[in-house]
Amino acid sequence: MTDENIPTSRAAARGGSRTVMLTRTGGPRALMLQKAKLLLISGKEQGREVVIDKDVFTIGAGSQNDLIVADPAASRRHCEIHQRTEGFMLRDLGSTNGTLVQGVRVCEVYLTQGVEFQVGTVRLVFCPLHETVSYPLSPRESFGRLNGASTAMRRVFHLGETYAKTDAAILIQGETGTGKELLADALHAHSTRSKKPFVVIDCGSLAKGVIESELFGHAKGSFTGAGSERIGAFEQADGGTVFLDEIGELDLSLQPKLLRALEKKEVRRMGANTVRHVDVRIIAATNRNLEREVREGRFREDLYYRLSIVKIELPPLRQRKDDIPLLVQCFLKELTGADDPKDWPDFERSMALFRQHDWPGNARELRNVVEMAVRGSAGRIDLGACLTLGRINDADSGIVTEGAPDMPFKLAKNQLVGHFEKDYIEKLLERNGGNISRAAREAQIERAYLQRLVRKHALNPRGR
Image (tube, rainbow, N blue to C red; front, side, top):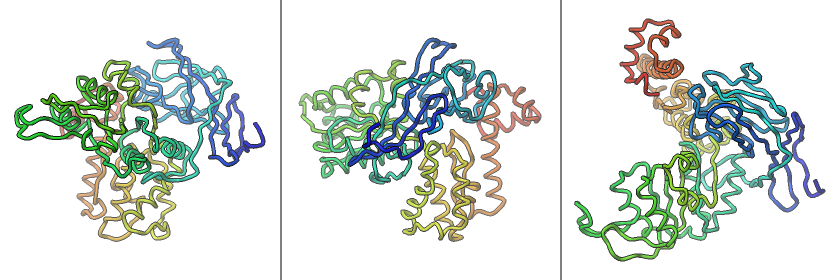
């Protein structure tokens, strides 16, 4: 380390790992992380090695994880490894079967050289490496309408500031509600194309027969109902940006046509013979793991590499909970024009409650809770109460009971009880593999009563 690199946080070692914050003279702050790897020593992928080169590395059966464990005993979000100043911490995420280290179930534990842990039935060995990776950080706490002071978000802002002014294709990855469209809008606004159109196509909401016309347009009479010609998104955005949201949902049969348009910078309307040149910048977004989609044959590899010249991953809110007070103040200012926390009852207590919540709906869910408090007819109400009344901790549903504080007590109570029943029964059935008898025994209720609850909430015992 030279005199130009000044550590701004203590670098402690436990198990040989180090995380260092650096400030370079005349440049942005940087986060320097030590690399590590995981060796899978059992399961279908025995012998596979996976490098950990990010500060939060997630493991589980769900497609959004950094390491996907295809094991029926692994939970969708099973555990994660945090790289901290003290070392690499393994943290269980409330998994059904637990995370075992040397055979002992743990909540949080620091990993050391050669330690073995288990996710479902898959065993892994942790190995720190003698390599580091440095991530430059933006000195700013916002980019467009995205806000955050956390390391994770300032890394996102640095990438946005760096690549917005280029014409490189950008792939934004992140869970629903993390702000992918806000980031795409900010990238366009900070680009040299900002005065030209920004055209959004939601690949997940359009039927296969419609999306080709939306993208490339069609000639009059090219199909039934085509009474006039229509220009598509590429022509509309000529000189500007096309944002392809939920690109992972694009039908495989349309992917070659999109690839040709990107490579040749020209489009042909459906039913037309004329080829038209277009000059557009492409930004795509997905909540899927596209690398996995490629491996499983659901997404073309050549298209993936064409779209992901630059990859930006938006972190979920549960991985940047220190940003919650800042986000709440931004939402309050947006909705009311005032952002002083003193104006809101028990603000600090509410923020403590918010930090305990995992926010499966991410920043969008947080904004819903704040808006519920703002829109209530009773005036300024406790934000924490809105979280309790208006949101059930369901990692899949993202249910928000809007207006609960304004309802009659009995109606609000019945609504909350109904959400609780559905949430409880879904997780109960998931833990018991859809077996009604076993689930009823665990819950200590009659089998017939459990069946009534399943029918009441239209649940499929075997559908999870």
